[in-house]
Length: 110
Image (tube, rainbow, N blue to C red):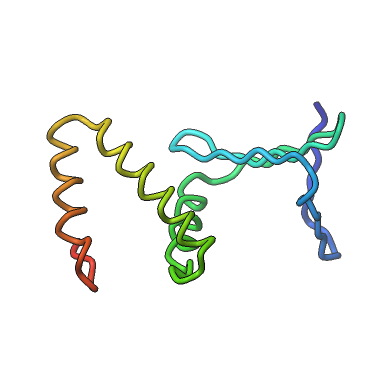
């Protein structure tokens, strides 16, 4: 596999990937974006903390009145509840308590 240095570049580059195969993953140990088209592949390794911050920021910026955003938020909520349910009892109780205490408030308490 050949590696290339995309930067520095003198020009602004745009890759339209909406019709390509995309795989995106983030976790505490590895984050990456892979774009494929037939036999070509580009993988970009990302900073996990930075990606998580971007994801939280983007979720925070969703407009909850748009139907597509509401559907996404509902899926996100369901998956979050499933993940909380998989935690050990002590952590599960703390997370469930946090969720209940903040669900019907306009200001989230840390």
